[in-house]
Length: 161
Image (cartoon, rainbow, N blue to C red; front, side, top):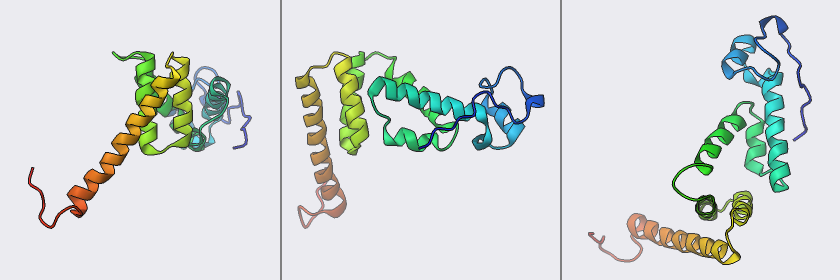
């Protein structure tokens, strides 16, 4: 994705409340009618992508895709931050759970990102490996469960549980 450079540019300064870059999504809609045309949101998206790249060394594909629709990446990142930075689980535990989910969903970028986060949060190589193996085991049994319940491939008569 090519980086958009529109920092501080407001196409309708007469409607600007505050400084460029501080516009809420409501202000953007009021001013422009569509978020895609607004410089403030475009610059925020680029700043978020730069921060991700600085922290991880790469930008996962799904985040690049979200950044193509201004406003989406910011909402997604805020949602993820709330879940991944708070709660009763430790940072390491949250990262290992996220890694397991990424494994189950077969998301290569997420697997890489969450394994890196787990290691940064103190997970050992053995802990990362166990999270990966557990996710693989659940993925395998999930396939068998679907076959058993949906396709009834194991017997001529449905099993009543």
